[in-house]
Image (tube, rainbow, N blue to C red; front, side, top):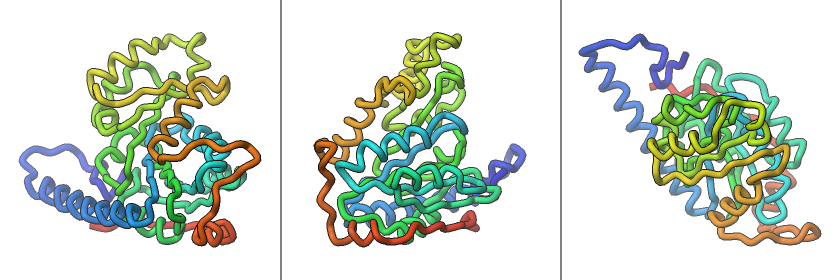
Length: 264
């Protein structure tokens, strides 16, 4: 599937050279991720890496987030998909500045891709950048992008056993958002069972149960972001005071960056 992380290679035994290459690749990525983290810190930009399986509701949650938080803070996004720009188009429709990354056969974003996207995005000081990673519960967990927080989404339609089946992903999460809670009455899904499985894998992760249809849990999600950002909600008639860079960002044209996977 992916020439970057090697997940398309058949499992082998005694392949020490393969292990060495993987370690070198991840070490290179981690170095770039630290550079990204420092670059974001100098601008006081809060970056969130949003990860999940395809169809869990990342884009829907992000649309709602842009509508709500744009009164408080400048919000921009980096969209990761193997092809097309459908999700980016949805975010632009609600006024979000977006850079699109198409990975081709790649199954995740990496730190170098984000570094180039951030230069295109040029987020203003004190803003929020949400990275919507490629839909995949495996490889994105391995790659540090330089984000401040990792948020993993899981939908009720995926089943309550996801944390046990994909422990690396859920272990990497600072926050887990359970989506599509409005469908629980129609599914064989127990939120308590999901919570228990999550606690076995990651006792420290926060959990928010949400529904973009009923609105359940969305205030908790917004409050979590505001707390991390250190901002307070403002009234609907108000808007955050733009800095000079924010004004230039708002007037700039949306930019798409079709970036290939990083070669090792």
